[in-house]
Image 1: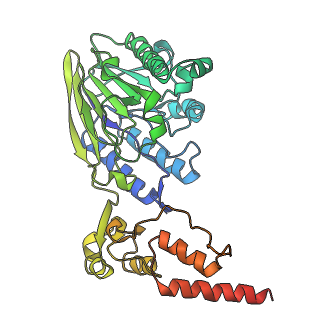
Image 2: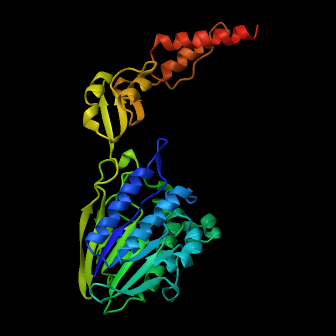
Image 3: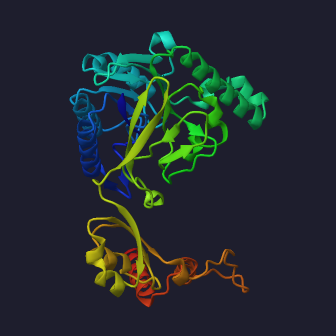
Length: 389
């Protein structure tokens, strides 16, 4: 049988105030096309469908349209909740989505209570078993009293053991004559961050070793880490990564989905299918003149700009006029003044520093040297003080 593995859509994500809905729409349309072109028997979405536990109506509409489009290819569609999703909402929508032929799972379940989804592959007629493990919060794995009385290492061990117990219980629903797959949203030891994860729920108490997964699984489809990667284990353990770079820390990642083939008794084999849609993220450097000369090279990429000039009034506006897709404009550290961490001392004569002097010191700590800024401050100060006379 053949299935598509995707995760970490994060629909509703904004970057520096810029909505990514248009990019997500293009990416999800391409994923539906890939599922159709490869005639997959199933689509496995390994969590973090949304950026927020309270997604906007537009984000929900886009997600539902994408899932219905995937179901429209004839594939089984199975979706689990990630740490960004609202598990309770997934459970509330579960009956409605089931009516559309889409399986939603928000919270961990017993194998015989929806924790293992069974179906027959439409293409090959092979039985398939998918063990599903949505994101498991540490507070549900470790009792409140243990959070207070146990060391962090002991708490980590409890989380690890809880996940192992759940996976072992779910694996009891596997069958020798079936393709057995694990679909989970969690952090595995040795996994590399993609750059945009919510670190508080990716490190410390929230990780498990790859050996926690059942060795007889044909494939482990993971979500949570945004970088495409394979982890060493007795069975294939794979993160497909996010299909869209979500933060500038992810700009070097190659967005993909996985198309995987598996058969009973044979380890799964997959390929990475690159995602071409969606604007790329890019960090660029140069003087204002250099950035203007190179503007055409940047295309429609969303930009983080490091200006190789000292700070001055109006610099950001000048850059954004040249590069409308510049979401972030900073001074290259090489051209920024070193920040003096010492607090200004009081004058030796015991007097008070004037507003202009204090403002000048503030500008110095920020690496800004521009007489026009100081003149504007002085004019504004005089106007305010004069109006109070």
